[in-house]
Image (cartoon, rainbow over all chains, first blue to last red; front, side, top):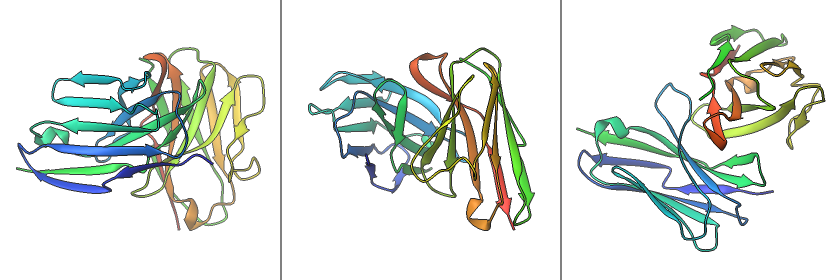
Length: 110
Length: 115
């Protein structure tokens, strides 16, 4: 079955440093979503990418969808302590089913 | 976006017992999803629940272990049957569409610990 892997599994950064997590699917995706889960919380939607090569920005966050629609990345510029959490990509299969990636846990050191 | 209420928020259960988790949504939705998140792990889809039909289970999950009810468009339950310590997880209810076509909105989750 489809697998969605993320690297790195963990990342510790100093506040102000940049952070990137990479998401790779074993199959071509119809779209990809990104979610953030704060410690003790539930996943919260960040963004959806649909088009091949698409790039979207949300303030300090930049999301990319690969040309082959099998990989994606999330880059955070100048991390802040509020960025702490686990970031999951979720690969879309068809219209409603999503396979979540393995997640990257980000810790920001003040 | 939809507001989802799940209960219980947490519970400690004895091996061999069953527990039913309730999920209430503040708007009508076609599909409701049940996910499991084992400690420190990602989310795994257990099943998709449509009103008026049997739930569709993902590979590795069976109805006898995780029976699901969907009596109307705003409510669903997931039962974890004959629990073992391996069932200790967070169980999350989710719906789609209220915040965008395919966007998933999650409940706060139900943290189960099986002794």
